[in-house]
Length: 397
Image (tube, rainbow, N blue to C red; front, side, top):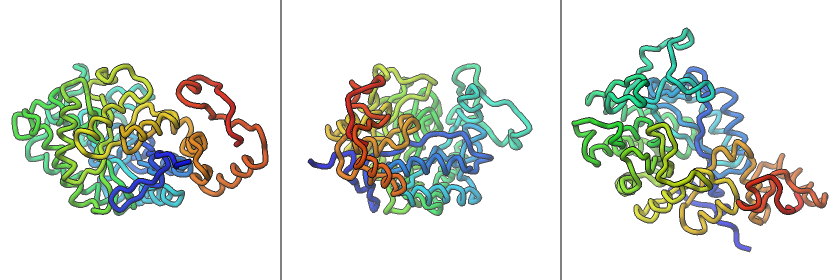
């Protein structure tokens, strides 16, 4: 039986991923003044130990004023390197490639954590640099209207913000990360420049489509200039935002950044107006996969599909049908950090337990070989049978 594509290695520049399961960057909002904690080590470590090929750390901010909450991780200073290096080393030691996403929240900065309501923060004693934590954006536009008004970046400031991405990329390399993603989606700063909904500038960074792309392209160029040539670079896009930025523009941007050194477009959507994108249709299994398929086909660049990819057969079909080159999971991995091992078993991969480290693999293989009729708690045959509890009998585990 041939190895499923999901568990076939893939080469990205000088890097080889052992499989095509990617842990998408997920905000933890658990840093202390930008510094990682043991929570970040545990969180990244459990995904690496679960068998994923690539584990991406959450959106790590390139500027202090780019922090979304009091709990964002930062990389605007060398002091942050040791904590992130600890996470990268731990990911690598447990068989996965360590990656990191770099971002800037723009006008969506300075907010309470989602489980605290997500509303704009108010001054408090724990925030020592309130005035420095400034909301900046391409244009002074607030959304919704009762939100704080951001300050439009001046023309002279923009190169300094671009350089902040490059400096953070240098630090990410020093911290030991082997893959880097630029966060250009979800209504954050790069996306704010791209969308005519949030960008009303009249200089060379606003107006025409190419002008609105200029900031994103300059960030790509600056990062690629310092990020080692042997290490891959991803760009996450909201391929449609229902606010003036659409798939056709995303395709044209992908065509421009590919030759500039972007290896993979991470295809997401929405985030500009605070609601799920509706043009993708009902939010259901794999609802954003058509974006990855279209950009892969039309822009001639590798893509990563993300968004309610839940089941092993679903992920394998996305790859087998040529709709994307990688699949990224987020909340399903929160539910089951051992999803890659589970998927390998369901897809009949020989030596499926080898996807996880020996302290797990040994005991699971021993149980599978010595105990009959044990059904793993996560077992289901696919989307149809496992959408609700139950399903058919599983292989011995």
